[in-house]
Amino acid sequence: PAIDIGQIEGGFVQGVGWLTTEELVWNDKGFLQTHAPSTYKIPATGDVPAHFKVDLWPEPNREDNVHGSKAVGEPPLMLAISAREALREAIAAFGSDPRRVPLASPATPEAIFNAIHAVRRG
Image (cartoon, rainbow, N blue to C red; front, side):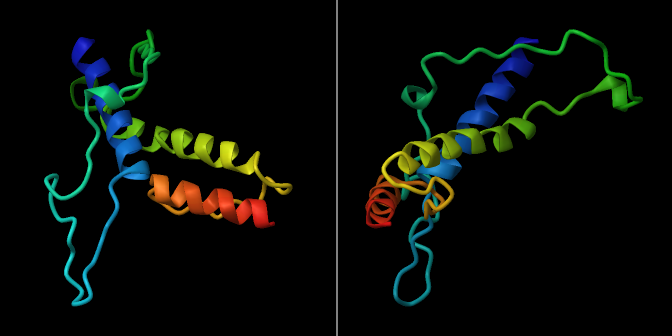
C-alpha cells in the first residue's frame, strides 16, 4: 500500500506542476526553449500540499485484471485539475461573472496576474 500511496501523491503533484508551472516557451525560430527539467520549473518536495491525505479503497478489485492490478499513478494526474480550478475560482472572486475567467494553462503566476486583470475589467 505504501508504494500505491506514493504513486498517487506523485501523480497528483506531477499534475499540479503540469497545470501550474510547466510552460512551453518557443523561440522566434520555432524551437522549444523549455525542453528539459533544467529549463523549466518542476514540482519539488516543497510544492507538496501541507495537508495531503491519501486513502486507498479497502475493497478488493471486482474486475479480472492482471494479478488484480489497479492503476494508481495515472488517475491522480487528472485529479490535479482541481488545483487549477481552485485557482480559477479564486480569480473569479475579483470579477462579477464567475463563468468568465480567461485562465491559461499552465496557470503560471503571469497567467494568474493576467486573468485577475481581465476579470476586473469585466
